[in-house]
Image 1 (cartoon, rainbow, N blue to C red):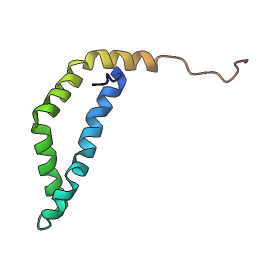
Image 2 (image 1 turned 60 degrees about the vertical axis):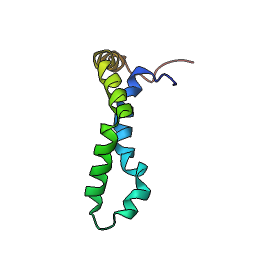
Image 3 (image 1 turned 30 degrees about the horizontal axis):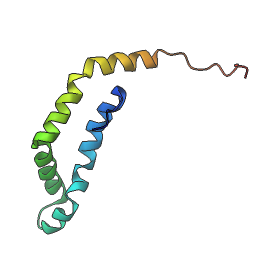
Image 4 (image 1 turned 90 degrees about the vertical axis):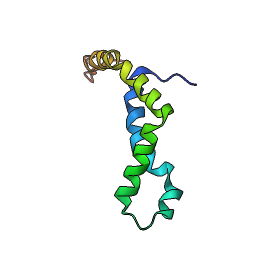
Length: 86
């Protein structure tokens, strides 16, 4: 498994949550009698309950403090003034 740089990890969680409905796209057509929101909610719950996703999210959460420290350090870097010389 490829290691992802620490600041990108929280975005993986967001990506998982946003992409979950797409993963069950074919199944959604089979459940036409249910509203779209209900179908997607069921799919998200199923995916979030899977052992692989639980483990991945736990790994992301375990590095929370380090991620926040890195984000703080990045935001404290001064922006270029625009007066730099090449």
